[in-house]
Amino acid sequence: MPDTEALIERLAAEHHEFRKLREEHRKYEAELIDLNGRGFLSADQHWRVSELKKLKLIAKDRMEVIIRQARAAAHA
Image 1 (cartoon, rainbow, N blue to C red):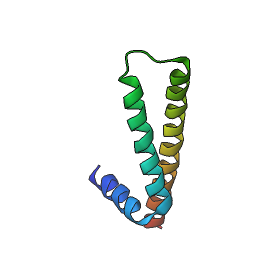
Image 2: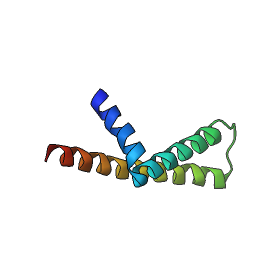
Image 3: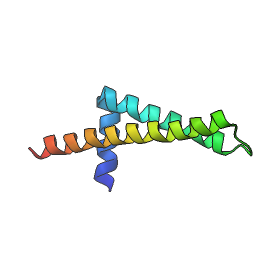
Image 4: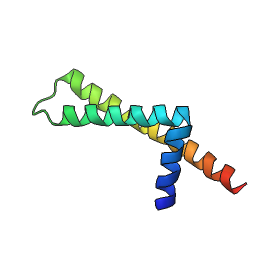
C-alpha cells in the first residue's frame, strides 16, 4: 500500500497529534523489545509489558482513526 505509506508520512510531517502518537508508539515498542530481551522479568516488569502493549494499541488505534479521517477528507 504505497499510498498508505505516503499518507502516513504526510500525516507525520503535518499532523502534530499523529506525529506524537507515532513517536509514543515507537518508544513503547523499543521498551517492549528491551524488556522481552531479558531472560527473567520481575512481577513489576511483567506488569509493565502488559501496560506497554495496551498503550501501544491505544496509540495505534488513534493513529488509525486519524488516517481514516484524512482519507475521508481527501475523498470528500
